[in-house]
Amino acid sequence: MVGDERLYDNCLGENFNQLLHTIHDDWFGNSAWKETSIEFYNTTYIFWLYLVVARVNEVFDTIDPKGTNQLVQKKRRSLSTFHEINLWAIFSKHPKEFIYAHWPEASCEGRTHSRTRSTAIRINTAYLKAHYSSESDKRPIELKNHTNVVVEYPKLTRLTEGLVKDFLAFRDFICKNEMVIDELKKDTNVPFENVR
Image (tube, rainbow, N blue to C red; front, side):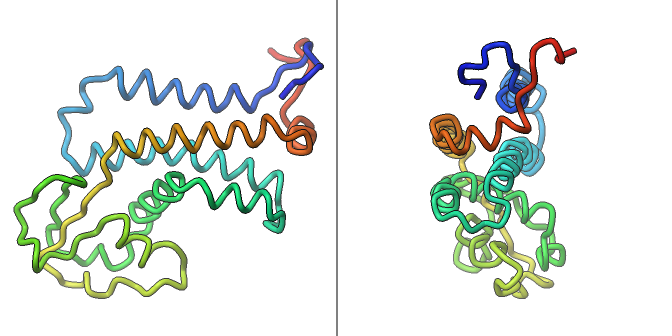
């Protein structure tokens, strides 16, 4: 991002780096997380990944504030794991009728669970796409007063690998596009003598 201006410091890379190191060091380097419930472990980890996605969205909003640039919007839509992480964060923050389900069971993609599969409502990524993608989605009213609900969190290894793939695509998009660099460096580059 600093290009030929070697005497400049860029905060964008630093801020993403700091967040990614926090996840790496404090999440993966902390065995205490493994002692928690499935729901706490998965939701907490997804929220940390969501912090990366939210910052990426801030950058997209900076370079395309009106959401009209086709190239930027195409790149944004192509980051499928970012969208999945965003859906799970929305579900956790804004549960809609899920709040009225009785004792839902938490499970993970690919794991068996104790609830009867044929009658259980399975809340997975496909379910979230149908009910939590936008305000205009059909509300999940079938969850109200339901006693057989399973929340199937995505496999975290798959989500992590997808996050890395999407993040690298995002990084290449902003770091290899001269117009994007010119727009972003106005808000992210300062001379070294102004740092600390």
